[in-house]
Length: 222
Image (cartoon, rainbow, N blue to C red; front, side, top):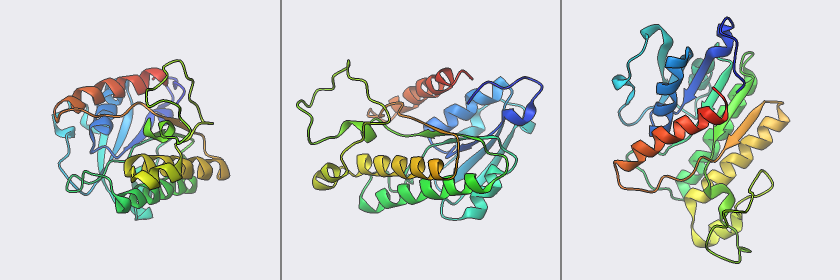
């Protein structure tokens, strides 16, 4: 998302979805001090971490989100010029399986379709995962080549994921492909970012997500 002029408040009106997760909370926490007004869309599970953020109460509005209900998505997007989107499974089902794979893909489709129906959304930042580009059957080594450039031409092999039941990678790959195709078809300005996978003890992901939140905003020059 390009930096907006300080006087153009409409370009500083964004939605963070799902703001219930560590990354979403971190993004909201960093956007608010920068002068953005934030609609924080929370899926109806778990406990919000936004209560611990110090901010101007007029700058943040919280919405309950159902990714299968267009009305709840459109309500959160109303009046916003940009969307930061990430998907996290419910806390009562934290592990990906075949069902959760389908849920993630359908949610991505519904959110991008809702963006296309609005008159104000012109930029979407879609948070994907490194697992959407890394898993391929033709890799000669299981060690990641740090000199290898991976971009929109590189995708995880869907058949490979299905064969080995790599549901998280499959979900992220299909969700990003679905969102990219829909964005292209509906002329949405979308950028997808793979900020890395969080694989650590319970408390460490919080610190990593703070880093990732800063990383996302730095890359976008916000």
